[in-house]
Length: 107
Length: 121
Image 1 (cartoon, chains in turn cyan, orange):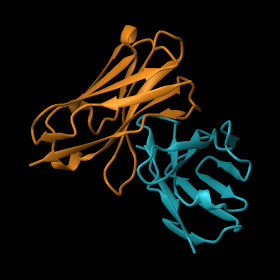
Image 2 (image 1 turned 90 degrees about the vertical axis):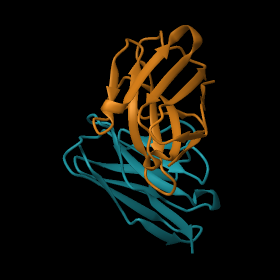
Image 3 (image 1 turned 180 degrees about the vertical axis):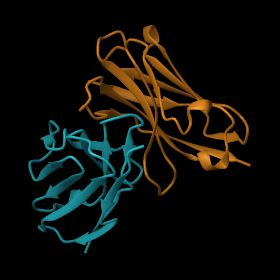
Image 4 (image 1 turned 90 degrees about the horizontal axis):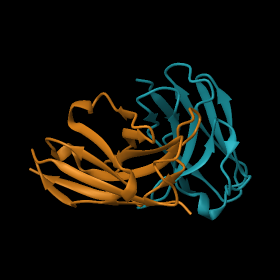
């Protein structure tokens, strides 16, 4: 199975900050990576797929980059509604796997 | 508008079989390229992909749970059913169903609200 390791696991930031979350794959997955946002008690919501393609309706302050084994999710200017947990998912091969999540908290 | 909703028991006993139903609208599993998957999330833990079924009947399973899982579809009724045998307290989780396209880069783009299943010993 392909393991995904996110860093950091916890992130404290302020409204207006620029933040970056990293997802590292245990083997190359080309660009077959998605990023999700999840709020407590809710289903995940896809933000980015194919490593860098913004899902329709997602604000442009979210961006993704990377290929192979290292990927990043960047939020250019944090808004109050962005405080949530973010996770990555690889779609390169079965079994599909998810990262352990990064919880973004208000400083 | 695509929607999905999970249904099933909220409480099962250890060793019992869990049957969950995903009822969806806004798409059909008779359409080329469509798939429905199941993903679970234990309280406070990471997401875990369980199984997928595609419009053509192709079934995919997480090998770590393969011996316990069966996914089926009822295309006319717009339903996908997941059964998991020999339930254990460690299987306590919120179970989600989700839609995706059978394109390698495609994510799970629509999700149900999830249903919490508690397994008692």
